[in-house]
Each structure stands twice: as structure tokens, then as C-alpha cells.
Image (cartoon, rainbow, N blue to C red; front, side, top):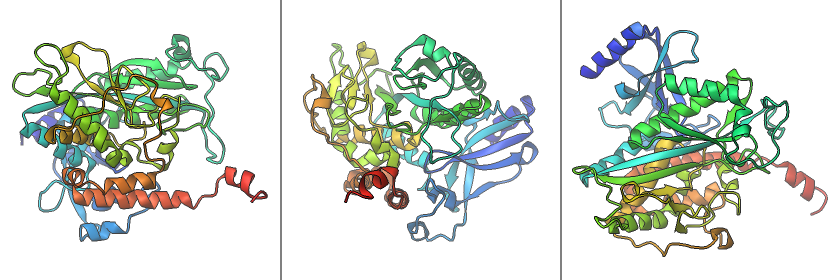
Length: 447
């Protein structure tokens, strides 16, 4: 009741006329409906269960009907008042609220990605630990591309010319898109998103925004909201923003790097550090878990057929399971930091992840490492790109791994794993039916 009162006062204080009732789908995009503000608190919100079981192309998995014994009935929605935000690009005064999904008997819906993250966080709570994360979001600005048969191009900036050269951390290159950047920051401020720095990444018109570290569920909500916000700001500037992992063949891919550390819930101390300022056994076990279990959850870090184009040598993306101190060629990097800030940077997830699932997966790996006291390899000191490729190279290969470890299945939920796998296999088979221009060029008359 108290939650409803806080939402009611928020609606009244901001004179909101309409509410976006949002649910993250399996891809991490927003599904839901618009409800007049006057009716929002008076009616139970419901949505069909089927929206959680659709592919990125809008198809359904055949397994969906069997997994829940469902006829695509309604699921119950509960608004989370901590996620209430204004929608700055709307024509009317509009609010958005992310909702949790429940079955008709009041249990957390097993297909909800937000609920999957909550399952993992509950395990940490039982251990007296508080995870802290900070995502780094990379994305590209591109010219509008109404014809998907044509390659993407960088947009024209204020100089009147598209970017062509590598310009990592260039201030002037970032200023090329000042109208977009200014609008993006204004939108983010209106939505109370905790974004920190913005840099120009190495790709043409590739930008990166860092978030201030905080609670994993809150940051997942913010990343979910941020991706919508960036796309809207880009459209207002007559361009596209894309979070594809590898949108252009000759440019680097885009990632969602996840910095993570653990605090004692009772003392607030970073448990990755000893009293003497060394890295703790807990830290090494956490790292060992990331190394061992990452292959099993790679389809959550690389959830689309395009994701695997990113994992190539020398383009700022990992290709194996090495970890190292301040080594950006490894998939697991330990940044230089004072003991109170000791953390791990997971560089495997692409920009195209569902943030709830990627954060849940990386925390699950670390949790299992601590529970089983897994020792990592020695820190890698060389160029990891000179080592063998150890990661799956296709979505199909990665999905096989997701079903191979019972610990991961138990943590994330067996029904969720079954549904996620079946959805992504549908996507893979759809993609596999498309004949590419490369095949026509090199195989048509030569084989």
C-alpha cells in the first residue's frame, strides 16, 4: 500500500497524464502498454505471458506452450516504485515504471529476466554479501538505414564529413556529435540515470558511456532505460544509435563491460581485499568461477547471431578465458585500484545483451567460484590475442554449453534455461536460412 501511495504522489506532483507500464523482454527491450494515469492505480496490470517467449524477430518458441502448460494466459504485473521515471521525449507528460512479473498464483514468473537477476542477488544476500557493479556501454551512431540490404555508414558530423580514422578518446571527434550528446545528457538527467563519463571509442562514431557503480538491479534497470533513451535522442537528430555487437565489418565491436566487486553487508568492506591490502582468497575464487563458468553462460553474454562476429583478434574484444592485471587483451581484467576499490572487469558481454541476464550470469559465475573454492589460472602477462581462441564462435555452440552445467541451471532456473535456449535456437535457424552476399560472390561459380 505504501508503494502505491508513493507512486500516486509521484503521478500527482509531476502532473503525469499517461504511464508506460514496462516489462523487459528476453532481448532486454521494452514491452508493455500505455495506461492513463487516473486508471493506473485502480486496475490490476496484466500482460500475456507470450511476450516473454518471443524471438528478436517476433516469432515464438514451440517449447513455450509445454514449459508452462499455458494457453498464453495473463501474467500479473507489480510496479516497482524505485523505477518510476519521466519520459522526456514524450509529447504529453508521461511516466514510465518497470514492472515485475508474477504467475497467477503469485510466484515470480520464471521467464522474467528481471526475476532471474533477483534469484542470483538473493543468493548473495544469504551469504551476507552485497555485489556492486558499474557497466560501461558502447554504441555506434550511424546514418539512417531504411534498407537493411545496405551496409551501415557513420553519420555526417558538424564538420560535414563522416569519420574514417581511429580516434579513441578524441575530444574533437566526440564534439562532432555535440547536438546528440547534449540531448542524450539532458534526457538522462531528466530520467535520473547515473551516467558518469563519455568518451569517443576507437570505431567511427563509436561512443562509450560509463555508469557510476551501484546496486546490480538498479543498474540493470538503468541500462534497460538508457538504451531506449539513446535511441530516442539519436532519432531526434535524424540518425540511428545501435547497440549491435558488430554493426560494421571494418569497425571494432561494441561491448557492455561490467565492473564488479563484493562488499560485506555488515561492515561495508570490500571482501576482494585483505586487511593488508592484498587480493583475498575470495577474490581469487570469484575469478576462478568466472573462468570456469563463462563458457557455459556465453550465450547470455553474446545473445545474438551477430554477437560472435565481435570475438576476433586485435579489435578490443576477448578471444579466450585469460585474466590479467590491467591487461585489456584478456576477457577478465583487474584494473589498477586501491584496495577499497578492488574489482573485476568482465569484458565478454556485448552491447547487445539483456542487462538483467548478463549481470545475473557474471554474478552467478563468481558465486559458484566462491562456493566451490575454484582457483583461477595464473594472471596472464602477455598479449592474450597471441593465444588460442577458446570462446564459442556461434550462438548454436554457446547454447549447447548453457545446458551442460547443472549448477548454472539451478541458479538461473531450469524452465528459464529451457525457454531461453529454445528461443535463441529459433533465431539461429532463421539466420541460417539466409544466404549471404559473400556466399553468392565466392561460391556461386567457384565450387
